Amino acid sequence: MRLHGSCATLGDDAVLLLGPSGIGKSDLLLRLIDRGFVLVGDDQLELEAGRIKGVSPLIGMIELRGIGLFRADHRDSARLRLVVRLGAAKDRLPAPGNDAEFGVPLIALDPCAASATVRIHWALDAACGRRMQHCGAFAA
Image (cartoon, rainbow, N blue to C red; front, side, top):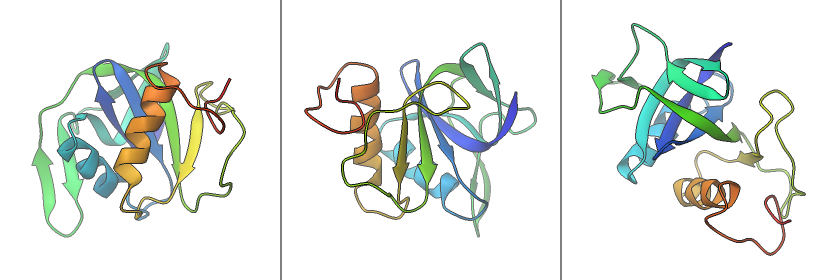
């Protein structure tokens, strides 16, 4: 399945950033990379059998709006573990749930929040069982 979004990974655990054009997917992706994540793909992605990858000719490329395209270190593919829908977060303590389209945990996040990258990192760790949560999107 081909989709429009941005994706970064820690190890083999990928985070898919989704939202309308211009909301800040690539900007948030850049901040995740600066935090130690690795690029999987920006703008055009392919999902097959739970693994996500960039699409040629954009493999290894990231767009910095207003500056241009840059080549970056990247990973060929990774296992999709978390979907982040960008926009206003709706619930302060959301109930656990999976994205209906992708079947993996889902969070909603304001991409402009100063803590957005930290929240994604902690959410990914919770989705993968590396961090325990007492209540909210990943509480059992």
